[in-house]
Each structure stands twice: as structure tokens, then as C-alpha cells.
Length: 502
Image (cartoon, rainbow, N blue to C red; front, top):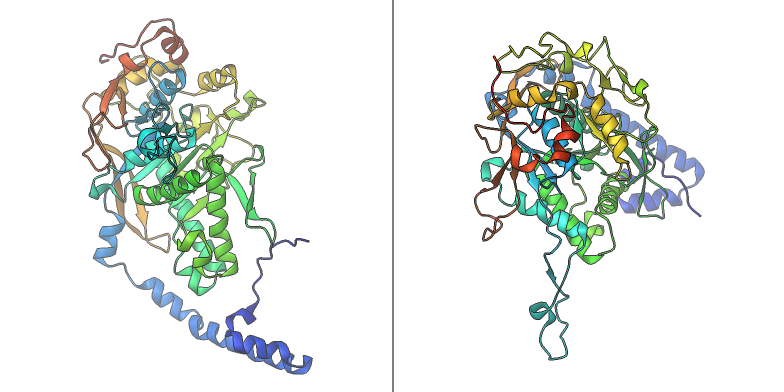
């Protein structure tokens, strides 16, 4: 027999165990008195904490210190990581161009080496009595390869980059349609709203530990019953049910490393598990900890279940395009949120004089994908496709993007974009109104000619902790094949060669 979790709180749990036991033994009359006394204590505590509002007003009126302003506006690195990318791959090429014409960070491609191996279980021996881990190896699962490739890249982060933000895609085939400053503003807004929601509904001991930092794509996960240690994730209305985290994750380097390190341990304990099912389990443990207030040692071998995960349930950052999507979801929107209208215009270039570009176009005049399930007038940034999406559907999406007809010219212009600064966004105090300044986001690794991507995999001889020494893949080498040229540009003009327009 299972019962739904109730998010209402039994306030008797605030009492010590001995007092709860005593309360349970009282007569109904005494129980009423005890409950009334407890309610009075809680109301008095609340009144002392809030007063008539003057206390809250005085706290809100305290100006931020210089140290707080400096921390809030401290520049950060911003990285775009694409595991599974490779040369002469159409979806890799589309994702790279999609990111670069909108001035996202120079992509970091992580090739996945399925030929690598891992030791067998320690303690086993072969027929010669020699440890198998020394003489025999077995190929790791694709999930282990994926996680290890990312952890190796994260492991070469310089100390000053630990707080930097990473947009980590599942794989190539994600298309961007809005600027990075929009993505970053929405990312921080999701975190702020999640923090406020958690602190408004949880008890004090949980409030202190709740600080969200990692965002997963739209899915609603909830605990199913009192007896189940598991979660059910229901996707947004326009999606089918799926495990948590399919498509991307976004968060600070140090926090994503912690999450993936724990994921790798779970994968090696259960090779049949998938990465996203483990994400779902870890998120479940976080939910269960917040809901039940149980001791943390109950979870994951004394590891803290609080991983700072929250969900983009409103599809502010991404949406998944199903094969049933029709053209009616592509439209111009006369009313758009400020983070879009105030961002760099859609066809802005360094030179501003390319004759074939509509330089004066605004975001309200270009076609954007806007699913019916997302917030009105707030189109998402990342367009995801389920793995089963046929190539024809991906091509239809690609050709519908506003920049596709001008992809060749825009990519030539993007070649000359400054590769240092990616975006700058306003930072506000906790009241949401007082502007503290701006935070600037930098490419983790800059390059004068930005047309292409870094091979972020470990070069031969390098180990985790070594300096960042990625090879750069120029566009012509990575995407110069006939299939890639036609699939990306589709204009019959042959390979992209770069150049300048005045």
C-alpha cells in the first residue's frame, strides 16, 4: 500500500522525541491543550521574527557591502562543452555554427574514445594466478566513457575557473536561437527563484543548506510514495516522459564535477544504469532529504544528498522538438521579455556593412521557435531533438532558424568576433531592484580566428591536472566535406572559405 507524499508539515516533529512520545500518550483533551500551546509558541516565534514588517524593511534597506558587490560582479569564465563531437559530422557542424554566429563560447569538442579500457574487478585472478586488472581489460560502457571524458576536461580547469559556468550538452545536434546573455540571465533567474521557493517552504535546517547551482531541462520530478526511494519525472506538456537531465545541464565547474564524480561511482557499481537514470536517483535523494528531514548519513554512504539541482520546468532555457512539430510554432513575437529585446540584435556584426544582411532587424521581426507549453512571449534558447528524430526533421528545424538563409555571411562575420568576452549581464541585489553592476563572462580559452572548435580531449601524454592544451579544429578541416557544406549552408556555393565583407 502506498500513499502520496504530502508537502504539508507535521509541526509536532519540531519537538524532541521524548516530548513527541509524551504528546502521543495524552488524552484528547490534553492533546488539544498541547497542540494549542505549540501553535502559540510557533505564532510567537513567527511574530518575533517578523514583527509588523519594520524588521524586514530595515533588513531590506541595508545596502550591500563593497565585498558583496565585488563578489556579485566578479568576472567568470563561460564554456560550451559538446561530448561526442567529431569531424565530418553534420550535427557537430550545425551545433558549432549555431553557437558561433550568436557569439557563444568557442565550443569544446570532447571526442569519445570507445576503444579505451578499464581494469576488471580488483581481487580476481586469471588462470595463471595473476591479477586480471594487470593483464586483462574490458571496454567501459558508453555512459562511463561519456562521464570520464567530461571529468578529464573539468580536471584541467585552472583554479580561477572553478566558479566558471559550463553549458554541457548531451551530444551534438542542439541548435541555438538566442544570445548567450539571454541564457545567462535566465539561468541565474531560475536559481534565484528555486532558492526563494525552497527557503519559503522548508524548515530551518534545510534552508541553510539549500543553494541551487545546477539546472537541468524541463521535467517535473516528484516522489511517488512513502515506501519508494525513487522519483517519477514527467516532462513538460509537449514532451513524452523521460529521465531527468536529457539534453543538457548548466552550472559551475566545481558543482558539475561533484555531480559527475558521484555519477561515475554509481555507474561503476551498476554498469547497466544510464547516466540520466542516475541523475534522477540523485535528484530523488535530494528531494527526499528536503521533504523528510532525515539524517544525511542515510544517503549515499554518508555523502551529502544536497547537490543544488533544480529544474527548468517552465522551458525558459530549452525545449524538445518532436516529429509532430509543425510550422505554426515558428512565429514572430511583437512582445518579448527585456532580456531578449535588450540583447545584441540578431544580425549584428563587427563590420555592420555586409550588403546581404538585414542589419536593422530586431528580435521581434525574426522567426523564433515558440512551443505552446512555454511561458507566453518567452521563447527558449536551446532547441533539442530526441535521439530518434529522423534527419529530415532535424533539417526542417535547421532551415527554419532565422540565421540559416544568411549562415555563410554570418559565419564569416563571426570569424572576426572578439573571442574574449562572451556576454555581460546586469546583477541585482536580493530585493530584485537594486542594481549592483554588471558581471562579464569570458571565453575560457580565446583565439583570434574563432571559426572552428577546440578538441578538448586529452592529448596523448597529458593527464588530469595538466595545463589546458587542446588542439584547435579549423572549420575547413572539421566541416569541409560535401555533406557538411550542403547540410549546413545549403546554398550551392561550395565550401566556406572565410574572408571579410565591407
